[in-house]
Picture 1 (cartoon, rainbow, N blue to C red):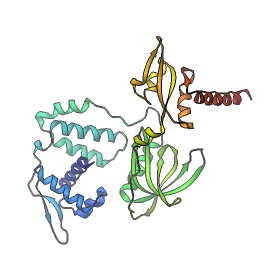
Picture 2: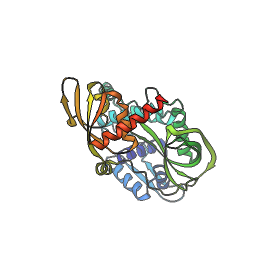
Picture 3: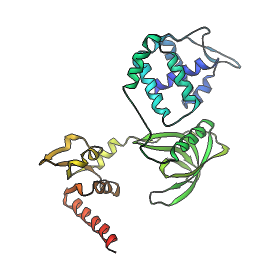
Picture 4: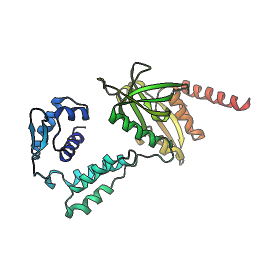
Length: 310
């Protein structure tokens, strides 16, 4: 996001005496043109950044300049602190601690309690209740690989449990729908792949470096695609699973059916994933229609029963 990048550039300029446009472009994986536009934007908000040409040239904040506390509003500072604090629950390191310290140093003394109150009004804890014990260490390793442009090797479990050995150029760490993913170029498949961390084992950082290649970031928003694929089915649920059903659709699709049940217009795609969602509600959910979905549910239930009868 541009705002986050501008803040990061300002922090870098405060920390360093001088840095080249190319170095900034490499850090944020954007074009030189984008960096020049960002520097112009920083100048417009009142922070005087000057450029010097030639060997050793680059951008720097004018000597003796200190950021006026008015550059960031109370809401700006509390939002930045909230975002950084939530990230620090998952990815720890000196960089985040230093950044948090610098941001806090911008808070005027007379505003400290008010901004602390605003910050504490929201809690974004990205850690899981139980989760994979390896995840934290894996996140740290991927973070190092991203910063140092080193190859990662690991075993990857496919959809049906088959494992393959992979060597990957790491490009991006993604948190999507409570799951962490690594976006990288797989040397085995000769293409970019999205790897789910929960399927990764024996993760190792290789000593080999790689030269970053151009790539398109993965598509993470499938809202429009899902709308064309999904249909509505009718399910009858007990109120005890209502909160879990609400993870998949909104309350406007619920209609009361007596005192303890609801009829729900449930978004559905005819594949294993969605059938398993219905089964996860156990005997607190009944598919009412369409009839062929109900018949398929019945067939799958018979298959499960057959396993236990044998």
